[in-house]
Image (cartoon, rainbow, N blue to C red):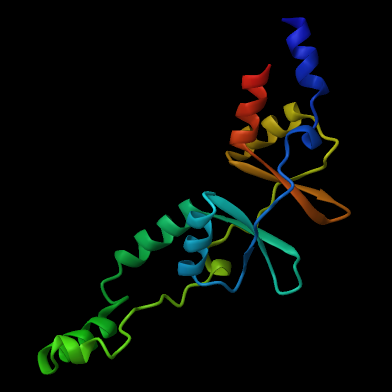
Length: 165
C-alpha cells in the first residue's frame, strides 16, 4: 500500500497530460462549437480570444444548458416560424428548397463559457490535480507554462493513472 502511494506521489502532470489541445474561439457559433466537439470526440475545450489568450472553458453541458433555456422561451424562434409557415402556404416544396431556412442562434461561445479557468503546471502532482478537480467539480484542468496553454488533463487521463497503478 505504501509503495502504491509513493508511486502516485511521483507522478506529475507532465506524465499524464495531453499536449494536443483543441481550443474554441470565443466568437464561434454554438453550431460550430458542437461540430468541433463531436468531430473530435471531446466533451469540452478551452476558449481563446482573438489574440489566442485563454479566457474560459466550454463544454457540451454548457451547450445543452443553453439549448434548454432557449427552448423554454416560446418567442426564441417565433419570427423564423412565421416566415417558414408563410413560405409553406404560398410556395411548392421545390420552390422552398431555393431558400435557406436554417435558423442559426445568435448565441456565441463567449455567451455560455465559464470564465473560471483551472490551471496547473507540468510539475504539479496528479494528487494535486485530483484535489483541484474534486474541489472544483470539474472534468479538465489546463496545463500552462509562462501563461501559455501547453496541455490538458482530463478525468479520463486520471482514470488511466489509476488503471496503470
